[in-house]
Amino acid sequence: QVQVVESGGGLVQPGGSLRLSCAASGFTFSSYAMSWYRQAPGKERESVATISSRGDTKYADSVKGRFTISRDFAKSTVYLQMNRLKPEDTAVYYCKAVRLSITYWGQGTQVTVSS
Picture 1 (spheres, rainbow, N blue to C red):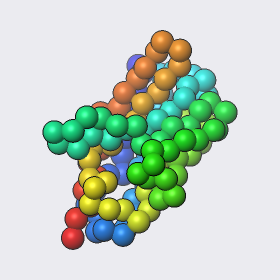
Picture 2 (picture 1 turned 90 degrees about the horizontal axis):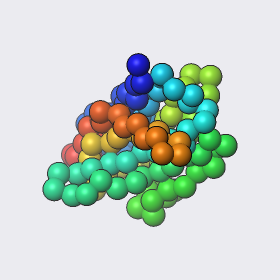
Picture 3 (picture 1 turned 135 degrees about the vertical axis):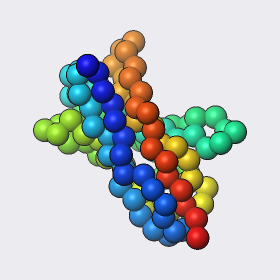
Picture 4 (picture 1 turned 180 degrees about the vertical axis):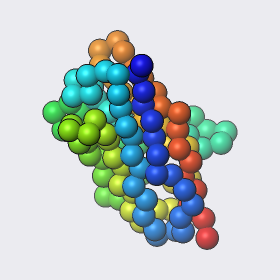
């Protein structure tokens, strides 16, 4: 019943923009902190951005000023607006929901930044 589903990935040129979406269901969305992670081939998964249940945000230094995380409580959806994309942003992007000891992961969506 619990679902965390990412969408919006694709191929974009350097300097371009994409908006990722993460649709959540089967749990109390408003009580969970939501995060975006990414993982490139052969590399460890890393945190990109987090938004708390109150709307407080934090970002990895590598994306600060370019990416914006937001959440829509009415739609139980989290977004990641990605601007001025770079080739090093290429990765599978994952959505994560966390509350106390409970963690839910999405299946990931591919983002490729290439000319």
